[in-house]
Length: 110
Image (cartoon, rainbow, N blue to C red; front, top):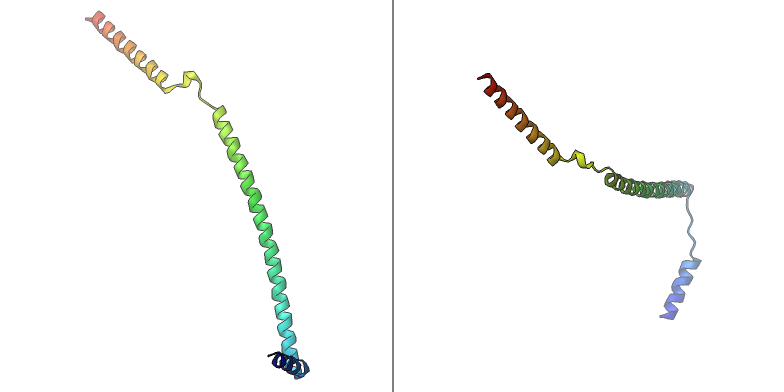
């Protein structure tokens, strides 16, 4: 087994491959194309990393805004005189007073 591996390494290491001019130009073009793709991917990665950091910052600011809004809601409570049941009571008393006044005026006229 060891002899086989040594023979394999020697045959691979000692063999020589020659390329034609056209193959060299094609390989060089392929290399340049792949290099451009790698540069493009690294640029995309850096842009995506920047986008992620901006989105994280936006999320942080949105959470802070939400907390401030919650505090604002707690501070802006209606006063005791702005109670709907109190308004209902005012309306009931006013309606009773107007009805009673109309009845008294009607009795006076008769």
